[in-house]
Length: 365
Image (tube, rainbow, N blue to C red; front, side, top):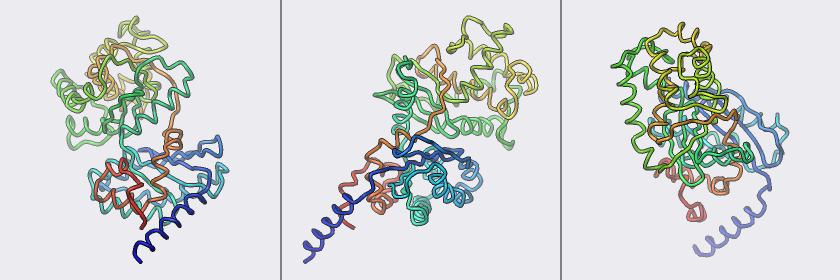
């Protein structure tokens, strides 16, 4: 009798799978907001939600949940996507951090409630998968103009060094790295901080901290490595600042051009800017608040990555990328949407590794 019930359950499951809608909606839950796209339309819509700020307040993602529910429901309507689509959200840096600093039971409860309220299956996506999403998206958008082995994607909470065959990621995004440095060098102060007046000892401490955080990068991404930065902390802050400094003779002009810059230019800029107050950095570089607060920490971050990978130059591409295309193409993620209770049970038991488990082994529930 029990076997008959099991077979009936599986038959019903097969019928349900066959009856699933033939469109997908994907939500990219970044550290600062949500982007939504669908394979049934070309638009991508977004809204700003400060998940990192929410998490840092009490080590939980909780106060932003009403905004998330609204976004899950309303953004697809704004974009004109069909109603009857399978809906999957990728939880990236802030959500990985929530899983690391909180309890699994608490995170599972939050995700179960979001699914109950909206029908969206939120998966906590490992960084190597996020890196793969980014490289494929950059390769597609640059349409033959990506000539490096890897991309550097610096988000708010995490970064990825990602290629087609190897990738590495860490919780060292622009905001996260700045916060870490603030806590280390200016304990008790506010964040973001401007890391003002760093002397040789302060710079050495910052570099030691960075090297420690990047100690496994070289083994995960074996050389030779060439890099293209695709994110705004480089394209709209570091690169323009270096070009301005080069124009004023503050760094070697040959080390900076319209397509990118060399490691030597970064090191010269750090030496020039580190001892100065923020107002003077603004005057020299043209990078204004609030972005000027991150400039020195961004330079130290870029320097650390170049040194860790052995790359001597960073190419720069102005791209506005999201994880939406990669998530839409991720059959494994969308298979989990049909076994979401099982996914949440695996998440409680395995943590982030639940994403890599096999949904086919869930059986009938």
